[in-house]
Image (cartoon, rainbow over all chains, first blue to last red; front, side, top):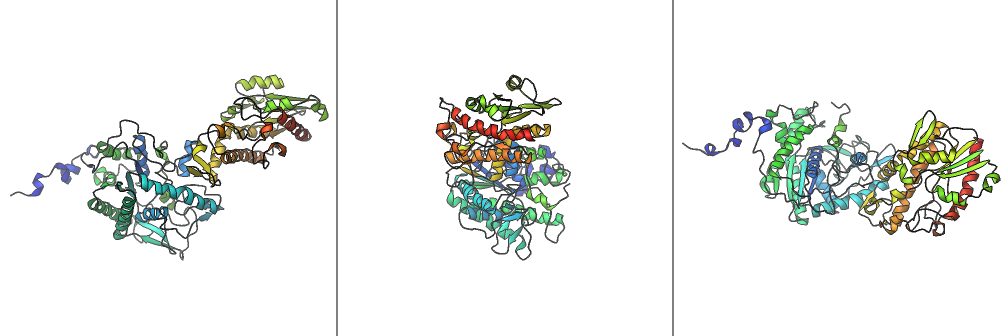
Length: 350
Length: 246
């Protein structure tokens, strides 16, 4: 008797593909769906983990785009605290698909949130990117002006000019404004602003919502930029905290499962969307948690290198320096400069 | 009583404007005016502090000795200092940064990117960090000291004519840098001596140097001339006299 499994390669079997292989010697984990040409402009966004990806691409001389580069006169050690050099624009961490969709809608003039500013101790913060100036802005006028005149035009350019957009899905949980459904990257009151149960609601985005949001972003982006491709990843970083009534382990597992399912179905639906298994590499039982820092949440720099080695095995780094472009990545910051809003939910850091 | 007017190359114009009788007219025994270094020196560590006082590095060390007969600035009951240090923004305003970035308040100026107040403040604070440290050392030493505010940028500065930076950006960056140092001096209770309103081609403290006060020499498009020096040294002497009463 014959059956299809008999002709499958070793990578298709748990025993020969995972259990009997040293995790540092895994091969064939990822096959690229398309090439990344040296001339391709690459942009990234997403959760904290996405900062690692962008950084490594820039270091390997991919044409990593930065649409809000830092002023050269700003000292390098200060740039991350102003949100420079973390992603391809100064949007800060984008944890949910709804956040990404909202950002795109805002940049394209399709949505203007009612709440424009948060305040804390006499300083003012952009509610949709509260960490990009860690001391806040000097006035509400400044926060709003820089969003409207500096940031959103940069995001518009990003969607128009990027060839490959890399997005890391981070969370399903979020906080929204009851006034207009605007989603915040972090609960009001944690970094700035004031939590008000009459104004703010918790929402755990569902699979249908997340899938619909990602499809909307992808299709809208392609309508602006028909050649744009996407690389989706899922962050292996668990939740700092859950606002559900579940144990954080259950809540995190739910979140990552939903996000992984969305990523898989986007890959199945669109031939120009690729999926990279950074989540699996870090979280597989075979790795026994060694890729995490002692807090079992942050991913170690060595682990990031292991993850990216699988990526670069398929996508070799460009051999020559790419030609100068209007938006070129600024010098990569140190690995120590990963800034994670979500960590602020837990005042006691392990 | 001996007034020492020491500092960067803007001191030269003050020396050119000085008349020997000014000391007696002010009731001072002597006035010494000397350039110690050129302003780019202050972008790096340019002084030392030890038990004997404040010393200067490199060529400024010899210049201090020539001017004061000593290798250190130190407290003396009959000595006061007016430092032309810390308000010269020439290297800062000519940086390429300002071709692509502008302060957000200048929304009328086309640029690639706008900067927050905090980011601009960080830039000027970094530029001025050694100057701020210097004045902290001056205050800690208890010197009778004032800070002389350098002449404003010229409307024909190379920042505008060659680097291609918008004039409004030059003025805004210059003003931010000066505000940064002035703020620190206020905290240290070190008085500042500002140029007279007459030298500005517009609002005092917020406009360029009138070209008639600019030094007309080749590519030297940031120094003032002896006419400026004549106006300014009078201010310096008059306001420095109060230091001796402290």
